[in-house]
Image 1: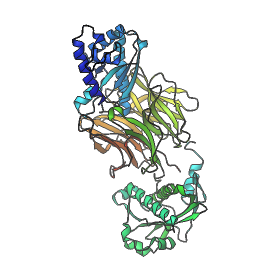
Image 2: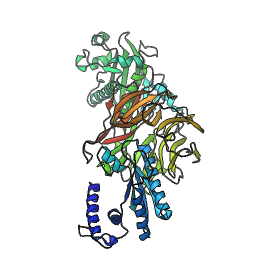
Image 3: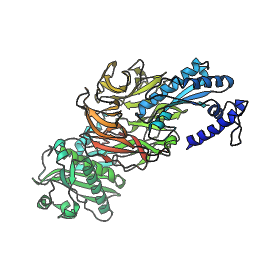
Image 4: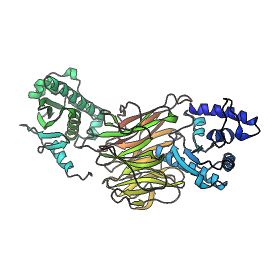
Amino acid sequence: MTTRLLSAAAALALLAACSSTDQNAAQTGAGGTIRPGSQEDLVANVGDRVLFDFDSSVVRGDQRPILSRQAEWMGRNAEVRIQVEGHADERGTREYNLALGQRRANAARDVLVASGVNGARLSTISYGKDRPAALGSDEASWAQNRRAVSVVQ
Amino acid sequence: MNPASPFAPTRRRVLLGAGAGLVAPGIMAVPLPAAAQAPAGAVIDVMRARTDPIPVAVPDLAGTGEAARVGRDIARVVQANLRNSGLFRPVDRAAFIQTAESAAQTPRFQDWRLIGAQALVTGRVLEQGGGLRVEFRLWDVLPETQLQGTAFSAPAANWRRIAHLISDVIYERLLGEKGYFDTRVVYVSETGPRDRRTRRLAIMDQDGENHRYLTDGRFSALTPRFHPSADRIAFMSYQDRGQPRVVLFDIGSGRQQVLGNFPGMTLSPRFAPDGNAVVLSAMRGGDANIYVVDLGSRSERQLTSGGGLDVSPCFSPDGTQVVFNSDRGGDQQLYVMSASGGSPRRISFGNGRYATPVWSPRGDLIAFTRFGRGGFAIGVMRPDGSGERILSEGWAMEGPTFAPNGRVLMFHRETRATDSRGGGYSARIVSIDIAGFNERPVPTPTDATDPAWSPLLS
């Protein structure tokens, strides 16, 4: 449910962002102001996550621009610290998926560092398959769950 | 305490009738001799009992007043243990001819032969100084001999434990090897929606009774494993400033302690068979390698190196080897190496990925999770990788754990979510005979994952 609500909020925020001249001052449809450098700002205006292929921790070409935007955003918001959370889908064992999630978090972190973010502003953690974003038992859900999510600390 | 405890063999001897002594905290046992005591030795072996379960009659233990209720409860627990093993076939109580009271005095063997009983359990419960005296006798019905006679003295609260001890003695006398009833299971109790689950450690008797929680759920707890003394647990927790770490947990005191000084995540702990070390995985960068942490000196020894995810290590019961799973060859497979390190040897070559290997306490088998396009399976293979057999298959299952006698496995089985909100999903512990029959649910109050079976408690 949280994810669905967040997605709806993100969609509204994106709509608002399109009509705004200043992305960091985007208004939400709900009437609140998104604070620049906040998680809501990251979700609405940048994208907080990258997705991975099955059993892979290689950052896909189509996902790299998201991390580049995150790096630029961290450049604009110099105080922000990020924890990158690595996750896996449910089609694996708990222990291996904890390790795989960590490897994905590290891979995303490495791209952020290569894009100019100071590594001291980044930390990583893995939740394996234990905190899915999508709750279905199907390929569409698994594709959303194989992810590295940047979370403002 | 470690498995080499000087008490263990004494307790076993006491239970099997060699003399009087303490068999568990608060439980004294003394032998009840009989005129026609049969020599030690198995009536039938496990292989035959699988296809031809031993017919056993378990009338209520006799008694008066409150003792009668306890006698009935003990008999029901014993009967359930024997039935659930799949190796015994309790005779229908409605067919009993002789009363429990009368049988407790002198069994009329022809009455028990007539209804097909091969073994008979009789006994009596007496209230004794605020506690209980539980007398139990096991009879071989055909030759009309007593196989076992033991009197337990204990506080009344220990009645269930006595029932499990009696069950283990019956198993051992009739099948010629140790049972697994006086044991506990620690597991992860899961509640709440899957994206925001509360995961707590819980402990229970092997039959699901005496259930209680060990952690409060503020931090996720995963993959608990027993120390060979059964009084400590190693598990993974997010309690250390939110970071996933292997933690030692003392069941008696509740004291917890992060193990080792690793910079990153530590996971998948298992104790060495002598209880003096823990083997685990530690992540550095994007790689997971296997380490042994000595519990005395707290020194760390690295067993594997290089790129790849090496996780889920488990010692052989003699402590000389370690089995683990690794993606070093492309996808997850099982590898065995010396406990002092050296080159791992791949042992899994079937279809799919292999994970969560556990070595049988008997040393003869390694149980594992296998998964691929078709789904998940639990299986066993010999330590050299030969003789692979799949015991159970389904949508999702993982994490086998052996009973201390190596004859039964528990693991958890999940059902597939049938909608986008995770409806229809469940996770439950089941047990199965290592021959692949008698799969049965283990009752838990909530969704349950990551079971770990304790050693025999006595």
